[in-house]
Image (cartoon, rainbow, N blue to C red; front, side, top):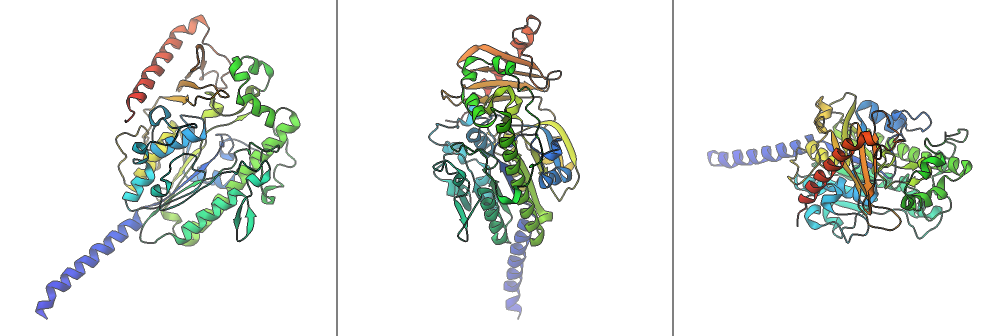
Length: 465
């Protein structure tokens, strides 16, 4: 018997270490990141919108950390999603529409790979929006899809099936999320990234927005107020290349008459409400599985959206309509609600996810982790400014760039540097009065221009060959 004791002790120690490792992995939080497409900051009940019905999103905001001043650094899906994935500005990672693919240098440092290295079981379902041929290497489980633009009608949103029945993409993405959660390994924490295509308009279709019968009755008897700054004088103030851009073209698709406006806005709201319903189903499953108390939920939109302001549509431009998004963090391990006025950016998502996972962010990342807000800290309080940019070189959308502080906004168009816009946001939050050509503001204009150019040069200097 004495001869067996050392081996028995060794076996006991090994078993103890293995069980301790498994326990540690289980104690790490699961992380659920939810991204919507084209949902701007005020398309949310909690943000003060008393028409839209988003009880599940509102509940997340009420239970967690709500960022009143959340922005994307590039207001278009491809570049914004690349910034979310890599923690970098567009000017650094260099990816947007028209690019071959996201550079391997940046993909190799992306948050899902960092999580995989840390022992997380990772998943992605929905619209990835970034060209990257090795997508299956980023996630353990992945299915990338978006609207099918070959269909110029509702089929663009209804081509996926569950048990042989055609379903809306919102329901399909939720179904995949629920299957992932049901079957996730229990000896590892999971990180699940969900990217809903809704409420993005189906561009090829005459009717732009599509939803299911589940939300068909919503907003039937409501008249949605028309857009602020919808008067023609705000359109007339735009440079000619904006007046003839895709922003104007899509205004005719969605908002050119009062009836068309009501139809589009109600469709847009219904699609958001449908995402909201699916979030409720996913949270109910987390409760059923007994893991809700250890699952961090992060929610945001990928860019803002015009509702016909300035008689324009889409996003892309440097106005806050395009840049400002909803963002919420809910950590059930640190309950307590806060409304945060500090700037929060899309480039903050990756470092935030990693901090929740107990993983250090790569040195090249430019975002700040927001995870500390759930503990009463204010990690981004020192951020007083950020660059905004849309660098895609395409004829139908003028490339633009700018600089935003708490009080001021400066921007210009890359092919027309002589045209500049300057707004004193403290007194003019709707960006009505362009002060760039007022004599008394020339010093501020020059300062903002210089600050932008200095920061832009730094971002270019951060590029990795």
